[in-house]
Each structure stands twice: as C-alpha cells, then as structure tokens.
Length: 368
Image (cartoon, rainbow, N blue to C red; front, side, top):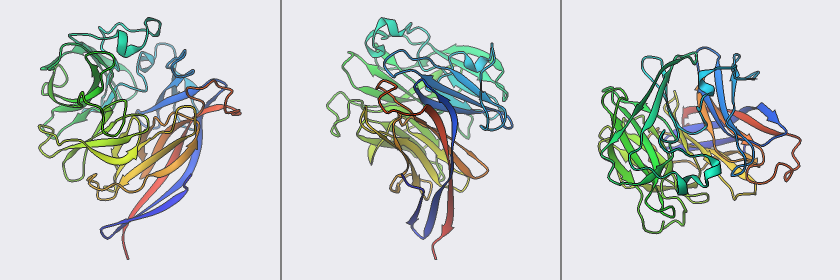
C-alpha cells in the first residue's frame, strides 16, 4: 500500500500523498459498493451495499451533516433512500439540482428471487427513470424516458457512471447492457438528450460478440464519462474482473467516438474526475474474488488521458474495489470498502467490516 509517490511527465511533477484514511461506517455485517453524493454545505449521502455479494444484499443509505465525521441512517421518508443506489447514473446539473437515473429499467421487473439479473430481466422497449433532487436531497421531479434509436431488440440494462452537461446544454452519458442471449458479452453505449432529459437518443455502442482479446468476461461495462482539460470527452470502461480497462475518446462533443483501447491496468467501475489543478484522476481497482483487492487511483498529469501514470495503490486487502470519489478544498476523497465481499463475513477474521475514505493530496508543480 502506497503512502506517497512522485510522478513526472513533460516537465511537470505530480506529488501524490495520503493525508489520512478515515472509517465512515463499520458493521458486523459485510459492507461494500460505496457511493458518495455531495449535497449543500457539509451534508453528504452515502449509499452502500450490506450483505454478502451474490447472496442476500440490501442497499441502505446513510447521511452526514458534518462532512463525514459522523453518519446516521437516513431518516424515514428521505427521498434518496428510495432506490438511489451505489450504481445508477448521477449528475450535478447547472441549476444546482442533482439528477439520478435508476440502475435498472422500470419495466425490467427483477428481484433476486427470480434468478440472475442478466438471464431473467431482458426487456424489449426499456423505460428508464430519471429523478431530480434539490441540493439538500428533496425530491423535485420523478419522470420516465425512452432512448430512441437503440439498434437491438432484446437486452438487459444496468447503468453506472456520470451524467454530463455539455457546453451547449445537451446531456450525455453512457448506458450498459447485455444484448441478446444471457451468455452474450456486455456493451456500453453513449446516449444524448437535447431536451433536458425528457428523451435520449442512441449515439454509438462499444462491444462486440467475438471473444475479448484480453480474456475479459465482460466487454465494455460500468462506463464513466468526463470532460477533459482539452475539451475532449473520455469514456472509461471495465472489461472484466481481472483484465485492463479500456477507454474511448470523443473530440467533437460526443458525436463520434474512437475505438476503445487498453489503458493497461485492470479495474471495475472506474470513476473519472478532472481535478481543479487540471490533473485527471480515475479511481478503480480489483483482485481475484475471495482474495485481497488492490484499490487505486490513476492520474493523467496533463488532464487529457493520453498518458496514465502507474496506479497509486492506496489499499490492499479485502473489499470490492468499487469506489466513489469527490474533490473538496483541493483534496481527492475516494470512498472504498474494507470488508469481505463474496466470501462469508468470518473468512478474513476482521474486527469489523467497513466503508472508508482515503484523502489524497495531488500537488502539481513544474519540474526543476
């Protein structure tokens, strides 16, 4: 586990150091899949998973009024406790509202009791749910929408990542799904809205039916988007549990996209963030199921994603390597789990299972 590193590229140095690590939640039960949602002031929401993965799992929500120093269960009737999960698509809008698209289509009608999601939740004409919340978490709107132009008939859909607002006001995000038979590989695809989220249009899809050349069991899943320092838009995607993430780039505002290329490092549910100093960060990680995970942040010093530095691995141990990050006062906060995941809670003999965050300082300077 790294506590500090110095990266140099094209006349610039990036000094990365762990300022502190803090426990946000602890439990005798398994905790995983953290997602931090920033509300106004020091109010934060933490959506997370409780229970053994692929066993009996719930999706609780905790709230902090003091920027993570203390947490309480969400109060009764709190809107963000209603199916706002660690997955789904989250966006911070220009009007200071928060948008969230549910992880599954409303007409998928899935429950764990019915069987594996991608086998039993195929739908032909998916309807998606988009909600908007105030900066304090009050529900403002609850609507549904369609994606026009999807070029296949039957698929299961599972959404992750970020909803972007582009300079012209369009909304852009990446969806994911398993098209066709349950054994088919996953696709990520770009969608765009020109009417504020009332409807979306299919733009393009990543993924192919042939065997993944990198050996991944999921070809392009759990995609995330970010607008880069040079104006490009980057899409970072998972390819499997132990295979390299791939990225695609748009140089024309999301209209066309490059063929995905490997970034060289494995990871699940990548979370991109352009930091205030112009550096691009991507938190992710993964290890073999049932074994210690490596959770890390990659940095692109010039903010373009053309070159990624060696991952800054801040956590090695049990967990899921699903992360969520935010920036506050120039520091990068990355939430992650230190917990059993697919194994029973007693396997690692932990004193407790926890959700933590690491606070990272990434200081940029010119090389001497």
